[in-house]
Image (cartoon, rainbow, N blue to C red; front, side, top):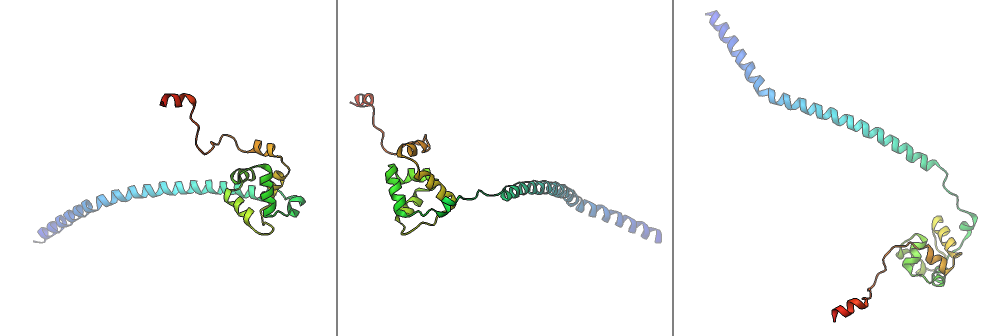
Amino acid sequence: MSNIAKALKGEISRISRKEAKSAVDPIAKSNTTLKKTVKELKARITALEKENKRLLAGVKQEKTETPPTPSEETKKARITSTAIRSLRSRLGLSQADFGKLAGVTTGAVYLWENKEGPLNLREKTKAALLSIKGMGARDAKEKLPEGEPKKGRKKASSAKIKKAR
């Protein structure tokens, strides 16, 4: 009887191993694909980190370069709202055109013109305003960026008017 028990026990363990393997096999396959994906992602992260370090080194080099020191003239310049207003009217420019020339927005020009007392401006902006101060109306209009369409209505050509009639 013991031989039958041993054979039965062996058969039961063989069938149970087979069932366990068939249940675990799909999980093992997905596990290996996930491990491959993780390996690829780690390699990608490493490459991106190297690229990031390279770019940061380039940015640090640019930052370590000495920034242009503002001249004494720009440091001592005292610019007020009335000076901005009179300069803009002397050049015959709109606030938008004056802003483009100075490298600022139209809103900034509006705020400058309506503020009381001296203006607290960045050195770059002060330098731009001082360079504009030395220009004439013709020079200022020549320096404005070209190619921007004018806003407003277009006049119809005489041919279009005749066609409409």
